[in-house]
Length: 231
Ligand code: SF4
Image 1 (spheres, protein in one colour):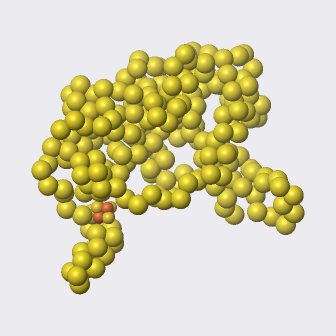
Image 2 (cartoon, helix red, strand yellow):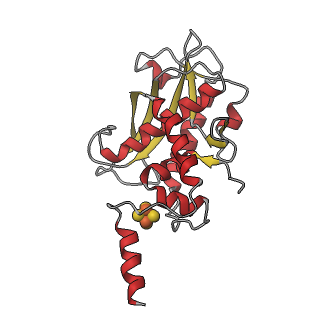
Image 3 (cartoon, protein in one colour):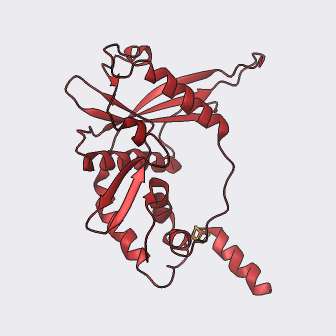
């Protein structure tokens, strides 16, 4: 069987439920699609525009200056491809034969040539944004996977990654077609040591003739099984 290239989100699907992953990749039975995050995508686009103005130059973007960070948006020649959803940073993993990829939001660099994975996030919540919720472990795995991908391309990547986290302000001000944000830079020190063993588990999963068991904490397979039993 010829395997498709696996995106970063497919690897996360495997970590959440190997059965769902197997059904998706081997049997082409996919979870119903969710709604598109159009406002989040708009914020990503605007942040890209903002940082692109300083890309490859000598001026630290004001947003980073305010945090005392001497980092510049990198101008690596592969960056347009690495940022594109359908190409991304692509790696052929020889030990498993898998091709894996992921599209980064941005890459910053310091004076010593270290590169920092950057991910843009957008939300709208009353409390200050953090990375503390359990579900945000997926965000951490995301940047760790990007760090691993870039290191396979011999990019000197620091363990430190940055989240540029825009939080929509909900106050009493009239809308007037203006949505305001408070944006916070959140550092995260990644550990990508899980990637290699996970890719081996992914390959083993895809070699199975039958799908693995459902994840016990997921309610949907149980719902389908009970609904199907009725006829
Ligand atoms: S247990 Fe949930 S996540 Fe896993 S295959 Fe079933 S529906 Fe998908």
